[in-house]
Length: 74
Image (tube, rainbow, N blue to C red; front, top):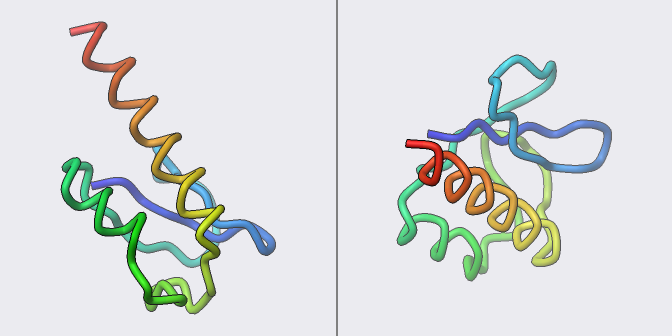
C-alpha cells in the first residue's frame, strides 16, 4: 500500500509514510492504480479533499516510476 497525503492543497504519495497531515492508502496493483486514475469520484474520502484528474495522473505516474525503479534493483 502507498500512503497518499495532502500537503497544503497538493495531494502526493508518501513512500516513507512519515509526512504529517491527513493520509489515505492506495494499493500498488496496476488495476487499482488504473481505477484510481479514471475514477469519477472527486473527493478522496479519507483525505477530505478533492483530487483533480491532473493530480491523480501525477500520483499514479510517481507510484509507477517508484515501482519500476524498485523492480529493476531486485
